[in-house]
Image (cartoon, rainbow, N blue to C red):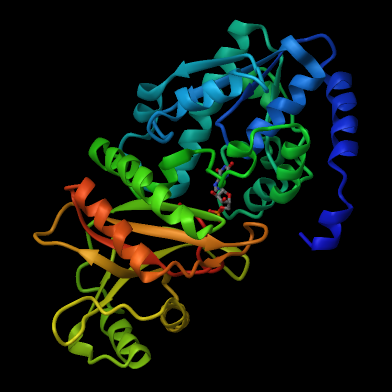
Amino acid sequence: MEPAALQKFSPQEFVNKQVIEIRKVVGRERALIAVSGGVDSTTCAVLTYRALGGNLLCAMLDDAFMRTGEPERVSEILSRPPLKLPIKIIRVQERFLKALKGLRDAEEKRRAFRETFYETLSEVAESEGCPYLVQGTIQADIVETVGGIKTQHNVLSQTGISPTEYYGFQIVEPLSTLYKEQVRRVARFLGVPSEISERQPFPGPGLLVRVVGEVKLDKLESVKVATDAAEKLLAEHRPNQYFVAIIDNTETPEHPRVSHVRETTARVLTIPAERISVKVFRDKATGIKSGKRHYGEIVAVKAQTANGFIYQPPIDRLVALQTEILRENPSLTRVFYAVQERLPKQPYVMAMRAIETHDFLTAKASRIPRKTLEKTAQKILQACSNVSSVYYDVTPKPPATVEME
Ligand code: XMP
């Protein structure tokens, strides 16, 4: 969004208009909203509470993909002053894990998440007598789902699914015309505590989209532990979003592009090809090519110094390297560069991701200092014994997306 349009936007006018609109639509009925503690859903809940008061119920789905302790932490913040929202935690971890079992494809996983999400909400809405579901869907969610990039968990009618027919409630989306920065301005205007209004975004399907490929319990547990460590250490450099993702340490055997990527890396980093190792993972990641969804391969690169340490060039060089690699190898969609590793081989690897962006529709890798990347990777390896290597994802959006899936 252009800075001029952002300046012209009046949160007060927006709130006044939406309060009237929500009252007009919902009347004296009860409404349900699913909250995650993110900026969008919280702002939407506070706005709707202004309009409906006690006729609003906030549901926090403890769906197995929240960060450690998050359902409890968020419920506490939302229910205490100044927000004092009526909130219930719905414990549905087993249900979500069952729905995701055995799925590897990113879009299949997202669709299974969305279905379970709405089925659960449909049951809660029925038992609580709520004919309306309010959601904090924003403009970017709709643009990307309708554009076919990825299925957002909270976009239904825009993709032709009738909520009334399938789930028995009508949907109200007060924030659907806003971009993230406008939502933050509305949040500040509404007095949402800064620990939420200034928080980095968190995807609706949560850590599900950061467990690349199949969900396994030990893999999910490690991504939670690593998330705690990485969020603490990367926050200092104020990227717009920062997190980790976990991937099966399974390569495509004898991938035809490996030697080509090795030569490109040797040329760009001016390191002898013998000191460069390259692997392409079996599991893919979501990307965008020419405005369309591209589910492509992930390549991991490591160059070593003459005395066997991992060579750490400046981020700009790594970004230049990924541009070359992706230009020359159209099946690839992401480039990871090694930060720390250990032997022997373990079942998983992790990628740290930190990005700079204005609107989350495009993004570039943050220039996190090498020392911070190394320290974070070290912490992850210490905390997760099932992880062999920690990489930094240096791919911009496009051709990658912010999240892995
Ligand atoms: P991507 O990964 O599509 O993400 O480049 C752009 C921004 O949106 C967040 N994101 C989501 N938010 N539901 C959401 O509410 C989703 O399904 C979803 N997927 C991605 C992502 O974290 C980033 O901030």
